[in-house]
Image (cartoon, rainbow, N blue to C red; front, side, top):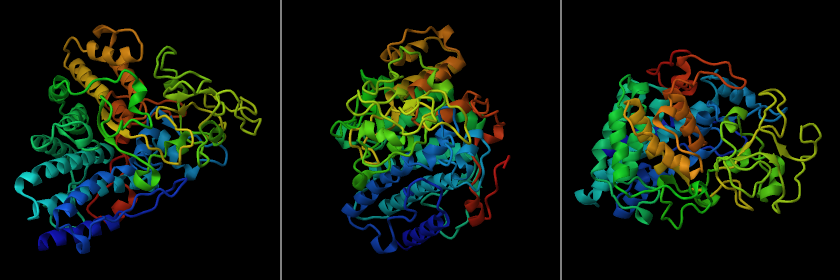
Length: 524
């Protein structure tokens, strides 16, 4: 127990070093300190279970503005945050993110680093507590520890993907080492893979309420398929066959299937009474703000006057929108796109004239400066990135349906990984190995969008990337996909391109200040 208490002190010290505020339009920054202290160190079975569940709550800040999801999306060709006059300049942090002129002093990178290490350190703490407890039998400990090792592996994959070489700290690390050395990126990646594989056997294969929002065996395998697709980028050695094999485990289990309606996966009621959708392998189970808040996309993307469309409890911020080229990459017949000028029909985007909740009364913006005049019209074209993008410019994110009367954070559960991705991961892995037949899996996904079939020969690398983009819009995978396909630095609207050093973000300056053993990534 003394070793565990010392580890707790180490955890709190490391967390305290990572505390730094970052710019945001609202105060939704995650709490920095661990919920566990020497005073409330879990002892009983109930305490241990509560502590184990608390590790999953570390995921809630993922969908906040200003952190992990923001840097993934705004650095890609999916999402931009234009400067709309006096709004959204924010010291230029989002303009730099868009243009890949990433600055180590910009707070969103430190916020992302902190968020991910909070997840790691909480998991470490609880793994240590469970292993050292007499309140659980060894058989009872195994599934808890397996879930937490899988969760920690996921956090480490995101860390290595985003920042490259990072400190690798586990429950067995030296508590006295408060300035740990960075572990090479490939080794962190291999650790994540080994942890996912080592923990799989002890995970539940149940679905539904018993494992909703948790990592079961199938979620572990699905995440592994995503991780292994990125092996060549992160280690220099491709593992396409292993990625395909992980996807096959999920597919061949016949446990999951595509939902008939794409948007069922993203609706406010997508938890389906904690049974989930037929497609959701692992989700973040958001709820009312006081219970499990943090998903504030409704604020981030909608126009101020969209409050009249959805009767939102708070006025939105008029920030995030998609790039015209990305919006227009969807065929108009693609059921995922949406219908311009008709917010009664769900789509990934809101575009065209906007109406009140009755679907008839035009919403006004109160200014004649925009192309739509006094009426609110979301134009796919964004006139410029800065300094005076039109207030109405850019199609807005509508993938996650907004309830009438929604509060400033939504109760739509966020799908970390879906069965559709497993199918597409298999297809890509097969294509990379020059195997035939991968079009079948792509066409399963396209068919739901009511699009025609493609042949293997028609699915080039560019087509595969585009198909993934249209299906997984605003699910946090686009940056990884662009890097894997060699397109992250290619350039897009108001961005002339970047070199390979920008495939990883800078180590945040506060972390360099706190840990003398860290060194900045090349290119910064």
